[in-house]
Amino acid sequence: MVGEIASRVLRHTVPDLECGLLVPSDGGMAGYSAYQDYGGHLCFLDGPGGVAAAVADRQAIDVGGGEFLDAVEASRRFAVWLPSTGSLNSYDVFISCVPPAPSV
Image 1 (cartoon, rainbow, N blue to C red):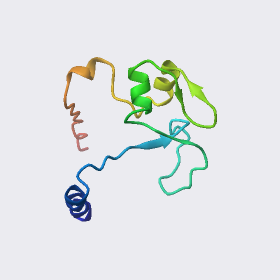
Image 2: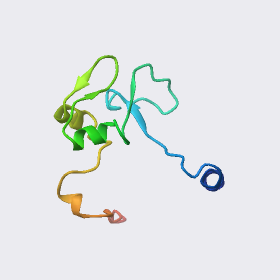
Image 3: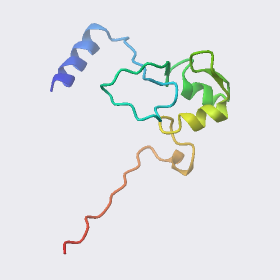
Protein backbone atom coordinates (compact mmCIF):
# COMPACT_ATOMS: atom_id res chain seq x y z
CA MET A 1 0.00 0.00 0.00
CA VAL A 2 2.80 2.45 0.83
CA GLY A 3 4.49 1.68 -2.49
CA GLU A 4 1.26 2.34 -4.35
CA ILE A 5 0.79 5.70 -2.60
CA ALA A 6 4.40 6.69 -3.28
CA SER A 7 3.99 5.72 -6.95
CA ARG A 8 0.90 7.90 -7.29
CA VAL A 9 2.58 10.88 -5.63
CA LEU A 10 5.68 10.55 -7.83
CA ARG A 11 3.64 10.18 -11.03
CA HIS A 12 1.77 13.37 -10.13
CA THR A 13 4.64 15.51 -8.82
CA VAL A 14 7.52 14.31 -11.01
CA PRO A 15 5.98 12.82 -14.17
CA ASP A 16 9.31 12.74 -16.04
CA LEU A 17 11.17 10.92 -13.29
CA GLU A 18 13.18 8.00 -14.58
CA CYS A 19 14.61 5.22 -12.46
CA GLY A 20 17.67 3.13 -13.09
CA LEU A 21 18.93 -0.08 -11.58
CA LEU A 22 22.48 -0.20 -10.26
CA VAL A 23 24.16 -3.56 -9.81
CA PRO A 24 27.53 -4.54 -8.31
CA SER A 25 30.29 -4.45 -10.91
CA ASP A 26 31.05 -8.11 -10.19
CA GLY A 27 27.56 -8.96 -11.48
CA GLY A 28 26.24 -9.64 -7.99
CA MET A 29 27.74 -13.09 -7.98
CA ALA A 30 29.31 -12.77 -4.53
CA GLY A 31 25.89 -13.15 -2.88
CA TYR A 32 25.70 -9.83 -1.06
CA SER A 33 22.82 -9.25 1.32
CA ALA A 34 20.45 -6.45 0.36
CA TYR A 35 21.23 -4.87 3.72
CA GLN A 36 24.97 -5.30 3.68
CA ASP A 37 27.14 -2.37 2.61
CA TYR A 38 28.75 -3.11 -0.70
CA GLY A 39 32.24 -1.69 -0.89
CA GLY A 40 32.81 -2.16 -4.61
CA HIS A 41 31.78 -0.25 -7.70
CA LEU A 42 28.22 -0.08 -8.97
CA CYS A 43 27.20 0.24 -12.61
CA PHE A 44 23.92 1.00 -14.31
CA LEU A 45 22.15 -2.04 -15.66
CA ASP A 46 19.63 -0.19 -17.81
CA GLY A 47 19.35 3.12 -19.61
CA PRO A 48 21.88 4.91 -21.80
CA GLY A 49 25.41 3.80 -20.98
CA GLY A 50 24.16 0.81 -19.00
CA VAL A 51 25.29 -2.79 -19.24
CA ALA A 52 22.17 -3.93 -21.14
CA ALA A 53 22.64 -1.28 -23.84
CA ALA A 54 26.36 -2.06 -24.18
CA VAL A 55 25.68 -5.78 -24.57
CA ALA A 56 22.86 -5.16 -27.08
CA ASP A 57 25.10 -2.82 -29.11
CA ARG A 58 28.10 -5.16 -28.73
CA GLN A 59 30.21 -2.41 -27.15
CA ALA A 60 32.76 -2.49 -24.34
CA ILE A 61 31.67 -1.00 -21.02
CA ASP A 62 33.47 0.52 -18.05
CA VAL A 63 32.20 -1.27 -14.94
CA GLY A 64 34.20 0.87 -12.54
CA GLY A 65 37.65 0.91 -11.07
CA GLY A 66 39.21 1.16 -14.52
CA GLU A 67 37.86 -2.27 -15.50
CA PHE A 68 36.47 -2.53 -19.04
CA LEU A 69 34.55 -5.54 -20.29
CA ASP A 70 33.79 -6.42 -23.87
CA ALA A 71 30.18 -7.26 -24.70
CA VAL A 72 30.72 -11.03 -24.45
CA GLU A 73 32.32 -10.87 -21.00
CA ALA A 74 29.70 -8.36 -19.79
CA SER A 75 26.90 -10.62 -20.99
CA ARG A 76 28.44 -13.53 -19.04
CA ARG A 77 29.07 -11.55 -15.88
CA PHE A 78 25.64 -9.90 -15.80
CA ALA A 79 23.65 -12.78 -17.32
CA VAL A 80 21.27 -13.07 -14.36
CA TRP A 81 20.31 -9.39 -14.77
CA LEU A 82 20.04 -9.15 -18.57
CA PRO A 83 17.01 -9.96 -20.74
CA SER A 84 16.98 -13.41 -22.27
CA THR A 85 18.46 -13.68 -25.75
CA GLY A 86 17.48 -17.29 -26.25
CA SER A 87 14.31 -18.98 -27.50
CA LEU A 88 12.18 -17.09 -24.96
CA ASN A 89 12.71 -13.83 -26.89
CA SER A 90 9.43 -14.27 -28.76
CA TYR A 91 7.37 -14.28 -25.57
CA ASP A 92 6.05 -11.19 -23.79
CA VAL A 93 5.36 -13.17 -20.62
CA PHE A 94 6.59 -16.59 -19.62
CA ILE A 95 4.92 -18.39 -16.73
CA SER A 96 6.31 -21.58 -15.32
CA CYS A 97 4.24 -23.77 -13.06
CA VAL A 98 5.46 -26.69 -11.01
CA PRO A 99 2.74 -29.12 -9.93
CA PRO A 100 2.53 -29.77 -6.21
CA ALA A 101 4.33 -32.82 -4.95
CA PRO A 102 2.03 -35.80 -4.38
CA SER A 103 1.08 -36.24 -0.77
CA VAL A 104 2.39 -39.40 0.84
